[in-house]
Structure formats: structure tokens, C-alpha cells
Length: 68
Image 1 (cartoon, rainbow, N blue to C red):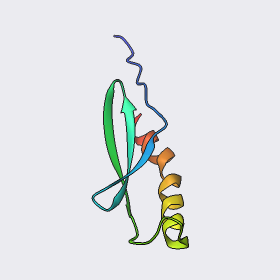
Image 2 (cartoon, rainbow, N blue to C red):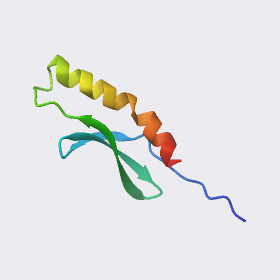
Image 3 (cartoon, one colour):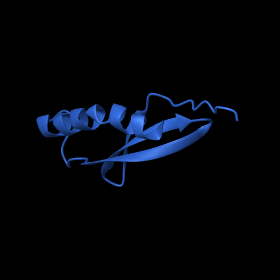
Image 4 (cartoon, rainbow, N blue to C red):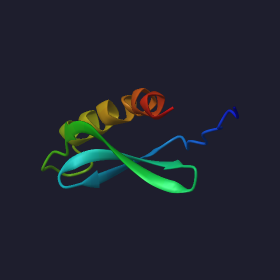
């Protein structure tokens, strides 16, 4: 039996349908995973927006590990 190697990118944070999503490139295909964190209706320079974005970025390694 052969071991398959899974190539997963580090992930990219994107906004989709008002929720932060992480896009991974897995073996030539794109996989979208939700962080479950809503994108605030505020300016990107506001504290609320930046805090939500930091929280979403912190979830990227956890979502990446679930894909592997």
C-alpha cells in the first residue's frame, strides 16, 4: 500500500458571505473552510475589525491541521 502525500498551503484569509473563510490549496484544488467569525460592519482600520481579523488568523493553523 502506498502512502499518499498531502500538500496543503498555509492558508489565506478571505471574506465570503460576511464570515471569515480560510482558503487552502490542497493537491491542486482549493478548499474553503469557515472560521465561524463574522466580519464586522466597520472600517478595516477600526479596532473591532482588526480584533475579529486577528481572531480569524489565529484559527488558520487549527483548520489546517484538520485538513491533514
